Picture 1 (cartoon, rainbow, N blue to C red):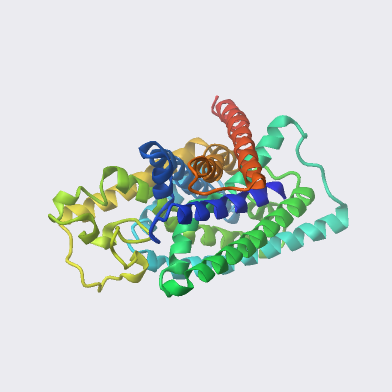
Picture 2 (picture 1 turned 45 degrees about the vertical axis):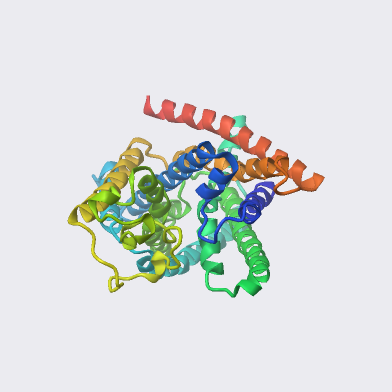
Length: 407
């Protein structure tokens, strides 16, 4: 359970550092990095967020393709390349959803579908363990250990969007109750992430013991392939649909970084001669508006009272997103293994984002901005050391396995 505690601790530390730096409510992870370490800190956070979120998109494409192949296993002669290209085409279409508000109903339905799949897989795992006992997966070699740890770090990719969630939670509160609301959010965060962690631990422990022969990285695809019960075809399809529905939301943080590097949707001068906070907000991939604005994208719709942008902005905005999805699809084609993709993304992107809050916290302590008790200093140092170990060793084994597969 150490990785679970570490992930939650890093999320809480990030939020506390933001408050210690007295950043505005709309402050992002990148803003915290800039306030602590200047441009280098901001660039580091941006690089990690973009790598992680684009990596998650690659994983999603490959996972959906794997599940689709298992669902349509009766269609002989269709290669994995065909399924990956088909899924990439669908993702190209849904990536053009412009407003975050348009995604809420998708993510809500996706959560229901995913819970159904999790419960079904766990129940089947318990049934198999009861009938045949647990199998022995993995060799216990160092590579297997770090593949496992990298996958666990991948599970905490949500650290990249914890601050936008906090912003939405705190946005409309009376300033007089801000501190109590902040404490309520931290309690909610701990409860929610602890629950998710227990679900993942239960699912991993039971399914790992019950189905040691899984090689695709998808439990539901494995059940659909090996179990005669038609319900598992349905469960596999539900998982596929759930992941597809959340694909645009995973793309948003990465595109926000791209827009910050190259301008929001297009160079502002191509649209209108106005300040950043007055630009046409709906074109920006962001969870909140620019500095000085009190309205978030989730509150805007097609009827919002804002002037339309130049046509070039819309075209460039769409082309950037389409190009990003095509690149993700190409990566999914090259690394035709969900488990390896998860390990690779989890070993490079997630540990960096998990240890950055501890780096920032120690920096603020050194500058006397946020004074830490000895136990928190020790905890931050431990988080940094563990994350660095997983990042270096996990990346080495993942890249070695990737090179072996490609050769």
